[in-house]
Amino acid sequence: GLVLAGIGIAWLILDQGSSRDTGAHATVGSSSEFGDGSVSFQPASGWTLLQGGTLSACITTGPFTSTDIRQTRELLAYELLGCRATAAALLPVDVLVTAWAYDPYAWAKPNVNFPAATIPPTLDPSSCGVAAFEGQPPSTTECHVWVEANDRLLQITVWFGTESPSSALLATAQEGLDTLVVSEPASLGNDIAFEPAEGWHDQAVTPTSGNPAWALPVAWTSNIPLPIYSGAYLPAGPSNDDIANLPQDGVIVSVSQYIPTDSPSSTDQGSVDDAVPLQLSDARLLHGGWEGLSVGDVSQLYMRVVVDGRPVVVQAFFHTTDPTADLIKQAQIALNRLVIVPAS
Image 1 (tube, rainbow, N blue to C red):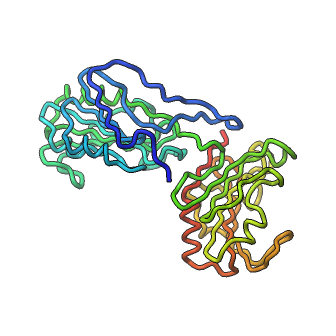
Image 2 (tube, rainbow, N blue to C red):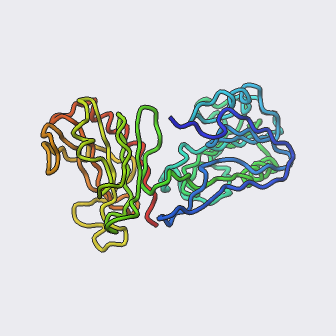
Image 3 (cartoon, helix red, strand yellow):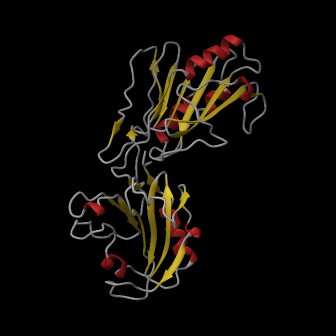
């Protein structure tokens, strides 16, 4: 499984004035700019920073509680730092700002709950409430700044240690928000890939030799080890032998781009616009083998969709003609880890 850099380390920064490099870059074969997937705050005078791994961070004008500092040392991968103990202990003159994203790799789109915004975001006092939110500590004001920015879904919360923050405190909170640093999503090394997960074996390639028609990204994941793709055959992906040798409880999920994004038929009939996470409930179940396959007791869930401008084929392979609900559930769990970089 993936362990994010920085997990278990608390960064306490007091009154320093350095800059933070998000490491943004573009990968070969993609027009998208990548970062390191991090969420943090620039060090600023009068503020203390507590970093919770890669995906979350808090800043406050007061002290952090020992509970929240200890939590940073115990966070597991993908766990988030909320600093709620510090929120409950705020003095009336103090402000706390927390920020996190749920995923370092996913490319997000704005929606009704996370409207499009820019960094730094703006605090809207109308989002603030007293005793208005579940678990809100007494004698505090809690404000929500939930936005999509830099292709990330961000949940930002501002806390005041008083039920009636003054205009000066509101301005202080905005100063804290102004130090927010949000990287673009991190790269998995291919325009189609699966996020790492324990118990799964992932491969992702974009062939660079052979027929240019096959120089398109493909990724596949399986719950058993498979031979590493050698490049000896095209198109890339799981081989017929990989599928034929699946055990009864084996699953392979493959996602491949089948035509270039600039092709006139990139949104051809049979492909529908969709978004991750894709749902296998939308797929067709196809039975039996095909040319080159040595066995016939196989099946696949198949669908063809366009995701962020990329026309892709999704296939979930099983060594049975009647996959059980549990097998399909395992395939869906795998598909939930799919990351597709927007075509433009």
